[in-house]
Image 1 (cartoon, rainbow, N blue to C red):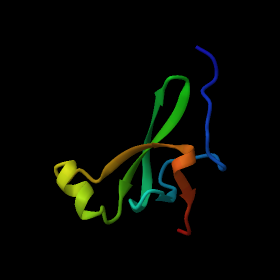
Image 2: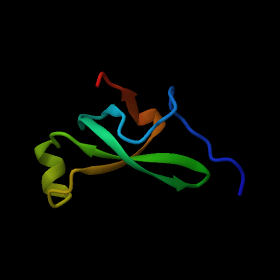
Image 3: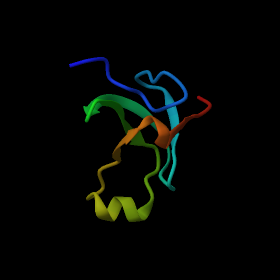
Length: 74
């Protein structure tokens, strides 16, 4: 397998604080995953929206790609 592609505007690092687009809010990168040749990040949300809590059984994590996050102030 070749080098994984990253669709974001910054190099992700574990524990970085990010804002997840789409109304998810802020969180910290806790891990990484790969899918179809792309690298993604696992983010533990600081305060998950109510709709996400209901849909995900209170699981605060989201699995997203680089284009779905922005670097946030620590």
